[in-house]
Length: 178
Image (cartoon, rainbow, N blue to C red; front, side, top):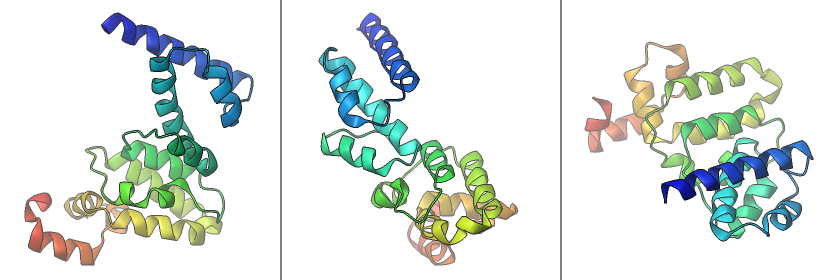
């Protein structure tokens, strides 16, 4: 099994590199045709990673297409950060689309992604109105709120502090704030 995993990872790397090099990575139909000749386990692993890649690129249409095929991936704060940094317009974004997954996300890696999101928001005045809804969504995450509370000495952490949620956490889940 271990050898097979290495083999799968190698094949996935080759597939992804080829699709990036020929600029076909964003054409889901082409990608599905391209990987059709590979073994099922390679296709399954690749489509999960491709879904994560599309999420990180904030490519909502492709995320929807891969989700419709029944694939999902384990969302991390790093993925949210990368997707946030790829928001360039008022169009719906992948973070807002996967709202429940974002609100209930639990991750131990908060500091660097939240700093990057905060910095991007502050430095892109022209996008702030577009980003506001996504920021509010992130503020609804209890783990982000708990992190912000524990690190409120930092400006970026105070930015993410949701006072209403904090009161609820103090009453219902005080262990998160220790």
